[in-house]
Length: 214
Length: 186
Image 1 (spheres, each protein chain N blue to C red):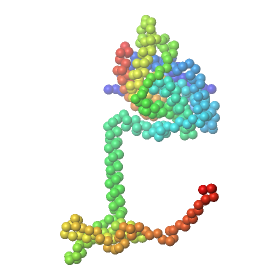
Image 2 (cartoon, chains in turn green, blue):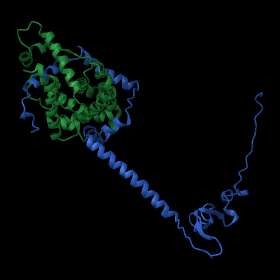
Image 3 (cartoon, rainbow over the protein chains, first blue to last red):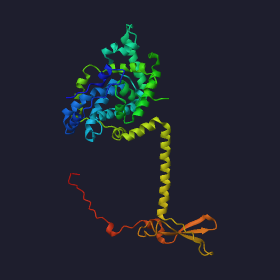
Image 4 (cartoon, chains in turn cyan, red):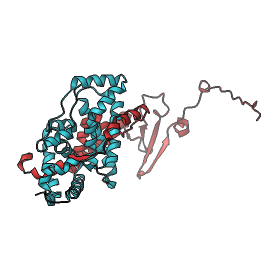
């Protein structure tokens, strides 16, 4: 069985360069989709397991809230199951379910606009040893974890100040390591739009976080 | 200004964004994730999206239009104006078409000088004379005071408004039988 490595892991291996897009497994994926169409929930369980981390991560980075991300990611998969008969295979299942999740999330964010509250996931142990982060936070600082936590909150707050399309493009490309082409497919726009949104979003973030960037 | 991502140094920012990759849900969270989804599907949990959300992922062009309208107020204004103009044009056009269809042709033919000027006005079309509301001719009497002194006079007795309502015939009557069931102790 061909399994795709979670994007987050890939990204942490090569944080500077965007990670390669997920290894395409069209034949096997379409087999699973066919079985799901016939009502095979085991096949759908396999599809969910394959993409759950990336879908959750995308929704989480968009909302900065674990509980919301949990609900939205689950609902995206349920919605995809309900609509699986309308999936014509024009794109990969992965792209299709991503679109569902992204649209659900954007819709949710529009509704909750005035009551945004962050509920952040904890940083994993590797964060303290990430060379990029070590470069940002002095290695000599004994309270590095505290500094990282503060940095995490500021970063998430800055992300939440971006508009949804700009936040999405930063999430997909800079955080999840998707290529421009893949981002364009998920957002259903052209690569030029992805690039311009990315540029603008980075400019905004840089302005918001200027105190923390050396 | 170049839109290229490389035209400005975002190195520090990208290193900072790497921090987000280390944000992880509680340990073991993904072990149960798919089973939660499958259980909700088995339980018949339905996710009902709004029409807008459904349109977004079923018709991507609609999403593109929506996003462009949202992000560009000028475009949204122009779009709104265009819709209004189209709406107004449609109303005017439909009214014009209606009046042409109805064939309202005010024919003000002057009658003999000793009698008040009268003109015959056809209400609706004469051709559809089998319809009560469509073929009644009324006379408009003109006086020297013009419209202020004008009066509408029915040329025929049938021009009264109640005469225009079709009278029911015997064939229209539907026989009904009313039966009351009083056997229930009432």
